[in-house]
Image (cartoon, rainbow, N blue to C red; front, side, top):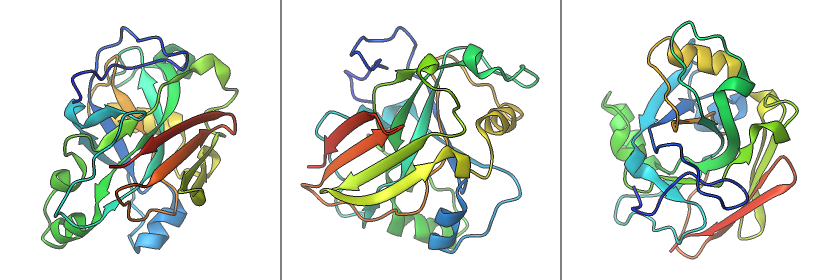
Length: 222
């Protein structure tokens, strides 16, 4: 974890929520499943990035070296404000502080090697600074979390376009399924899956991220 990382609101205020785990959802967009030739999972595919993978999106972002291609995976990010455990009523306004965008950076060659051996993916997805994250927009600014557009451009070329309306599982369903396995705590982040358009990132790439067609963030890889 970047020693200066702290959850931040859109107005740049630092939030008092602690920094916790990042729960990620794999294969939640059919177009992304197809582009990688994966099977459609019967259950939500869950994995966790540690807090040490978090870094503020607006900082210079280093790419891992000598580990093969590092891919962008743009995802809608939910910042949890209240404990959610098995059986908690899923009332989004009571559970989510706000919404942002995150990059689930993935060492694709390494991931493919690990998968071919039946091994877990942590080496490919949970390395330090593997989760650049934006500031968070308050929940009240959104009418429907299950219908939010988001876009990624790399060097001014559109690479990923998604909408949560196209997710295979709704926000409510994801929270229910996650917490049937383990508790979400205040300060945890949920990354809700990536649409098609993943690709290799290179040193010097400039990224622009847009949330709900009006909130804009940027970053640069070094």
